[in-house]
Image (cartoon, rainbow, N blue to C red; front, top):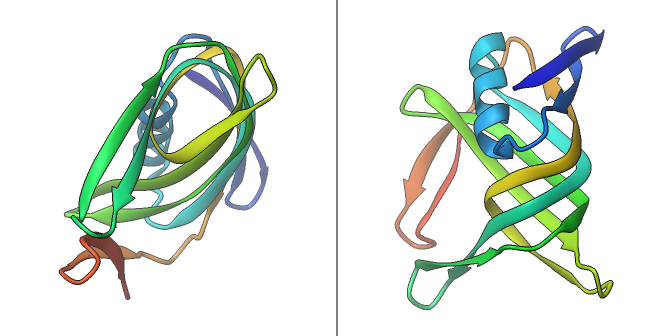
Length: 142
């Protein structure tokens, strides 16, 4: 699913295998290393992705899937826990063949080529999530 190199205490470089789903691979890595809080960023190439947009008026998500080859120009996010499980909050910008970009909250993305991520484990820290009625979001719980 991925290869790992720890480059310093709590900082990892991941190379995801071709055709794996990015969020699933990242969540599996976080479980393997018992990461309770952290940050992630990376680049790569994908063939399919589902992005999510929260409509603040309705507090409902609108999902859109893009089934085309795209370059991840930026993937950034944070790692926390919700109900004891890994909770990834990821945002992505991806460029298309015509050099336009699409992006938003990344629900899923399938690697097609390469995906290289840096993960920072905030060792000794656990950050949870709580549901906020006003925004309809799961916000940090300190």
